[in-house]
Length: 188
Image (cartoon, rainbow, N blue to C red; front, top):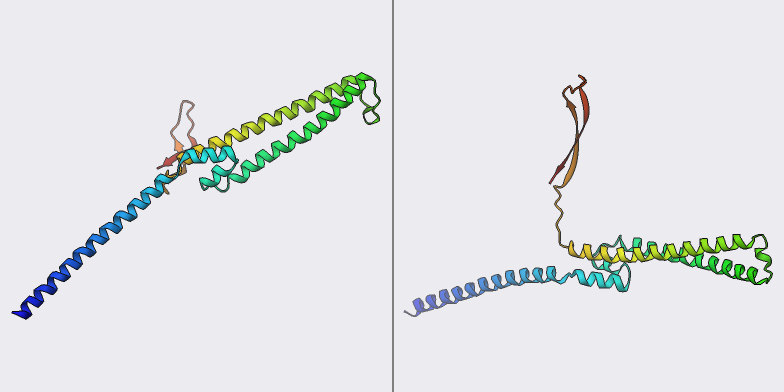
C-alpha cells in the first residue's frame, strides 16, 4: 500500500509540475507578444515631428532613416551659407550706395555708379531673402518628412512588389502596319 501511495504521490507531483510548466510557457508567450505590441506602440509620429522641429534631422534619426539626416543638414547648411554670403555682399553694397548718395568717397566701389550700386544691392538682398525662404521650406519639409515617416514606420513593404516589362507585338492598326512596343506591369 505504501508503494502504491508513493507512486500516486509522484504521479500527482509530476502532473502539477507539468501543469505549472505549461502555465509558464503560456505566460512567456503572452509576455513576448505584449512586449512586441508595446514596442510597436512606442514609436510615435508626434515625437518624430517634435524632434525635427527642435533639431532638424533628429526626427529622421528617430525614425531610423539615417540616410535622410545628412540631406536635411546639407540643405539647411547650403541655405545658411548662401544667406550669409549674400547678406555680407548686401551690407557692402548698401553701405557703398549710402556713401555715394551722401558724397563720401569709397575707392573700392569707384567703378560703380549710383544706379549700379543700387542694382547690386537689390540683387544681393533678393538672393539673401530667397535663400531664407528656401531654408524655411527645407526646414518645414524636414518636419513633414519626419511626420510621414513616423506614420509609415510600421508599414510593411512586401518583397513581392515589382515592376516588370515585356516586349509586345500589337496587331495591325488603322494604317495597316503591325506595331511593336513595351508593356509595363506592376506585381503586388
